[in-house]
Image (tube, rainbow, N blue to C red):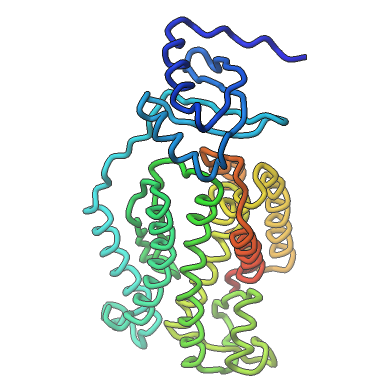
Length: 372
């Protein structure tokens, strides 16, 4: 049985009438109720008179004139339009911070690259030696984040410039980079474009960097006591294409130079971001494609990472990276970014590209990233 809805307070009548009049040509309202009286959410049930994908931006503009933002989803055979008493405004980001972090990341990646190229301890501080790694990894990460940035700008989503995270005391020289959306996306199509643009743009540069790096790297005996990069399907195929055989094998493997190492890191970051849960790029793509059903990926992902951790522990090369990710996903990975208009599905072209993007996760994911 339907629970009785709270009556509308008198002070909300003016808003209800104004909003209903503002959208008479866009949305036919059947009934109106008040959700969360302390917050003043207005709920309109009815149906669209035009294609939501075409008319929702105009609806949003009209609502914002009255101090509200519309959100749309389906409840059974009816469409629910909720008016939130807020207009999302964003403050300008401090570009000095972006620039300082970027310069710091240049130096941290130069340092790590120089440490790979150094033949003697004093050469570690000759930072210019690390330019191949620094330029390659910043190109890949920059393309990834700018892919997100320009897709967001295309859909009029307020967004910051990329924040690069320096980390000189690591194998990568950086903790990656990120941008921050300063407002919600309009619909699933926009969510898909913003989510997929990053890993796809990064991959466009990561693959050529990887192939150039592999082609200029030497193949030799596996050195005992070293740290070995893990294989993904895509990385194994790249080595097969360059060297004509699967590596490692018969006691030999490719000794990665700086450019090849940057290419491997680029593939690793791509696979990491495409895990189809929560606020990760793969989570955005999964939600854009499957809607609320994307939540079904959460526990399989947790279980799969747990099995990887267990296997690595039993096999003697414990992989703590995924243990940390399990805790992070348990804490933050259950919530997906939902668009304001959540009923328009992906068009056929985006649907195909979404399936391809999620397939890239299985191709680029590295189950055992590093082993000693």
